Image (cartoon, rainbow, N blue to C red; front, top):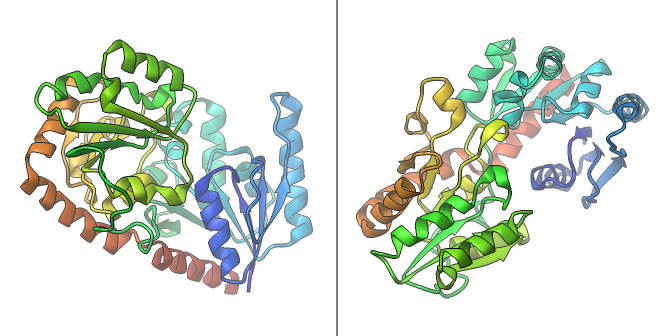
Length: 364
């Protein structure tokens, strides 16, 4: 059994799953967080976050103090540009594994000299940096990481919960398009609403389901009313993570809407991997980080579906129609996605790899 100190936001489902898994293996898990969510089996050390500039230094000081009091056998800091991750690196406590989530290394280094410095410092003072794919590895090396310190493990899902050909409820129509993007301006869920008038000209028996919830709810509902498409739209809102398989089970495709501006991250994304494990063809827009690198989403080894132009509702509508009208194409994509999810997205197998990595570092 190891004493593990995780640093990250407890409000994130990723941190919750991470902490819970290690606790279930019998490890003594502690979490330093500004989040308010409690995690079963995990000892939470809560830090107060405010906009007061002094709070930044207080959080760094308190994080370092907690680490030295706990004397963990290993630290796992999530999100390389986070204040608490910076503090963990400043503590000079080892071994430390940093998990880079995507936008922290894809976009944050260009936001300001401060973020650039923090990320490089955290990377240089880590024993191992965990990332989700080859792009993340290339980006980390560009930021100064040694190749032999980089550990690739994709976002993973519980394949017992997210699986193909299990029906939880009846389909509301012949075709179902699911959108699980948060209802936030930078995620642009409205673009999917704007496609519906084009789609229903050719397919009438169709439902567009939106799950996720967020601050744009009123705007989205007003948009649906303005476009006179309310009969085709079902706004579900935020749901418990364990309920997602219900909606995957009745969906024909998953549309992951644009990620705009500096919020754009990298990698597969947990929701996309969950859809793949359920055999639901993905439909994504080109990623900004790939465009900057002169690449396309179609170049990614894990992606095997169509791609739509960012911000182009008409192009998105045509890609939706292409997928829905071509059952053979959907089946081909489904088979490829299921194989990829089994090969790289098994949560338990991947977490066992991470656990072994921790054990090996502690033994050194």
